[in-house]
Length: 70
Image 1 (cartoon, rainbow, N blue to C red):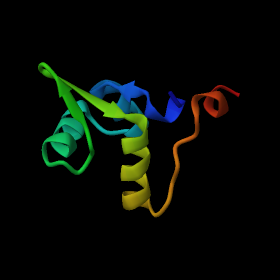
Image 2: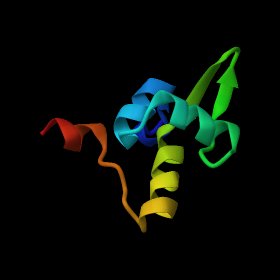
Image 3: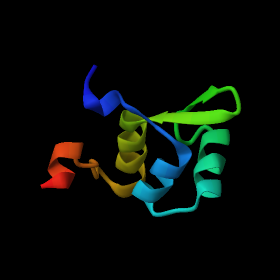
């Protein structure tokens, strides 16, 4: 599995997008951000966050983990 398909929590996505957890929940509920529910918890694929950012910010791609840690 590619790292781009790792699942993230709402809190992890909120940190990446620099928004509140509630904003991420709202984006998921409105299906603006593709996400899956596991019981009461939401899980968001890293690729879904990339797609959201591309739509909203004109093509921005989140760097892979290796690029961030350098």
